[in-house]
Length: 358
Image (cartoon, rainbow, N blue to C red; front, side, top):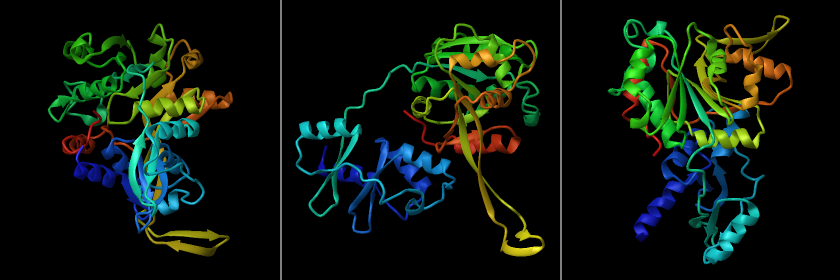
């Protein structure tokens, strides 16, 4: 690697406290290292920021537009570093002791010389089965869905579900179940057994709509976690990160969350007993919404009734009532629910500019 290439890579790793959570996520996505290095105005190292740090900031209520200086505890966490010139053997030893995979090497003035990385070892095949819910009628997308099931609608010239399957396959998920109800023959005719896409497809037919959880009882031989997702989602969510989050939190069910922001078109008044305490002009409100992607332990399937419609919201509420661990995984990657005609148009515009995981 030339000196110019090394400098270019290092520049993509550095970020300032005046950047936003969204800026940091974009930088992590672009540099392929899984981290960014926070520096001050003199480019002196402050701390390492990981994908997990950003997701925890979202869970604490910070918006994607929040400055890193607000969302991240800059002074509280001291990242492990080493002086430039430290031997590779000692670098690896330091990373092993600290249980980290990235070690900034600093110059005497505190600026970053380079980022040392431990060899990344991960499972080529994720121990998951996936379920794509593809049985919906797509009523809100009519007339597009009058003669085409929603997962087969073209996005960038290719069926939406084809992009979903490719994303799963890239993540190392090859066992995929597809629940069908509306025009199943068009889906089966296009995808067949999945061999052309490097996966093994199993079709589960719903004679009548069973709901987003009810259809899962038709899937047999489940001995590993299930990744369940709605069939009308265009996303490049990091499934590996979601599984890691699920494991670390010892969850029975993990639900993907998306930050949603809306602007109130009126001035909002805070008042108690008629006494006004605050007036905010057309404030923007941020909250987390269900992203339609779930990770379930196999034992959770026993909670689904044997008959009748049963939605994922019913299952989650049942688990919560029993005191089971249900956690939320913030999705900061690209995500779009193609539920309406304007969403479908947006997907056509977005698909050419979004960076899809390799």
